[in-house]
Image (cartoon, rainbow, N blue to C red; front, side):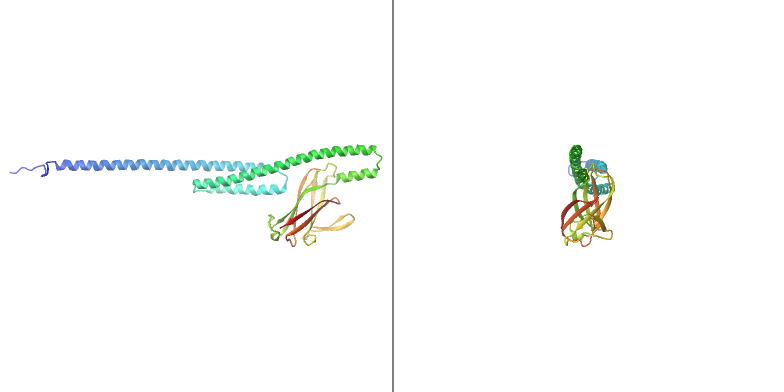
Length: 303
């Protein structure tokens, strides 16, 4: 009987052992590939997790900084009507930005940079208002000092008048003149139907006259009417249904608008609104009257 041979004809290497060895090599290589892919996947997951955490931190910082900025806007105090209205507009912008941040879902570094830029702009606006208000406060402090000096001068004037040979009528005339309230910073603004300022007069439907009644310790305190007359480029006094006549130097003259104010001897910012008729570009003359006196005038050119 012929005996079965476990060796091949080419060199005598066992066929079964060669096949097992090949399988082991293939399995080993596959294991290495799987390990490598697992490591790469783990690193990618860690990178994505780290990136997400960093974006969360950036978002929280933005929200915290914006919340602090809103507090700063709310803490600003000023008696100037124009600045107060502008601050209200910027506060609304900050509220809108806060809502956008809270609703944002697709965060990225590009969006973080965008919101940081908007936040930086709001901070710059806030600093500008703070500087402006500080300047006004310094001006008011200077005016208070000047008023104190004026008060001393008036006191000295009264003392000298008592000793002088001036008549009682002359003294009373000086006191009346010193007690007249004066005005400063007269301005005219063109407004649209929403009372928002517009640059072009032809777009305006209303007008606003802004001014400050100066402090005067000798003036009568309490409510009084302030009349404004606005003469347009056609030399006609502007007016509307609320306009009328008032007494001035023994005559009744027409006015564009009036406002009742409560004057307490201190600086008092005032704004008077009225609907304009035939508002066009050109030169406008403004006259302000109170207590029977012409207390201030100005000339404004609307574009």
